[in-house]
Image (cartoon, rainbow, N blue to C red; front, side, top):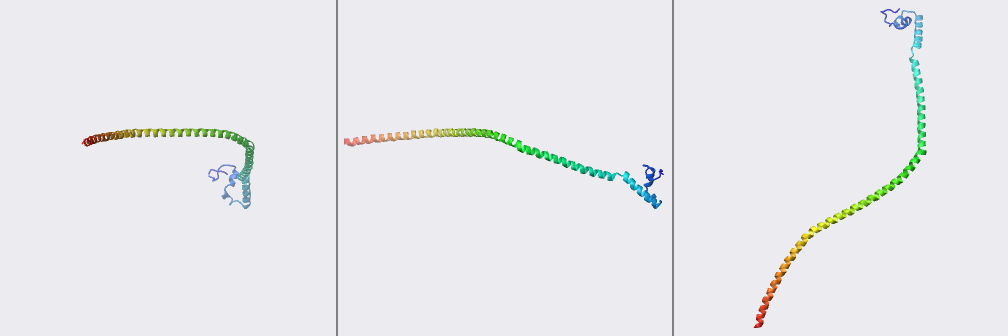
Length: 185
């Protein structure tokens, strides 16, 4: 039945191969056609496992999703338990430790703040002293030329005074001479 020029492949039983070509159905009788059709359905049910595989796949997916949902529920329950345990036990401990540490840190911070305040005061006093010294030095720098100028003016005034006194003496001497001349007359 299976020959080299047959359009059907040479795989499977010769009976099934003879059933596969549909063009041979027209030459056979109607009862034979019904039998061949029934045999084809039986063949597809027995050997074609796609519906079974699809059903098994659906069942597997359904079971997997249920188990996954249960597993996720267990994970969520474990997370809820650990969170509630943390809130009940660990959080108060952490809060107490934080309060204790916070008090000591606050004391250290106040001490550091006080120390920095004192350093700022010292720097301010040092800056004032430096400014005062600079002012004193600037005043001395201006004072010395001022004093030299005053000394120069004093000498000038003394010199003018001495000259004026000398003129007056000369004038008095001349006046006395004139007076003594007039008295002698």
